[in-house]
Figure (tube, rainbow, N blue to C red):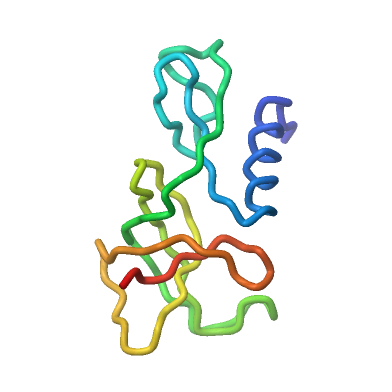
Length: 126
């Protein structure tokens, strides 16, 4: 599948911020609507430029699954893959690091963080 320039630029920008251990969101410069990660254009202003704003990092656990088999040495089992809903609205798939004694449940309050390799992860917020 051929990736359009606007799509690759969007992904590259997100990854550049992630490389700096920062979580940023794209929003429309005309209406200031924050775009979901699956959307590269504002539906109301498709010609509008995007701007990137820093996210709060606060989120809620929307849904999750715990893998008990390791499919990669980078992710030893058990590990949790989850869809989290950011405070600003967009949902994204990430890893949730489970703390001892903390039972995961939907609507659990989370905080964005970065693991030792610079990957975006979420941890239960105290």
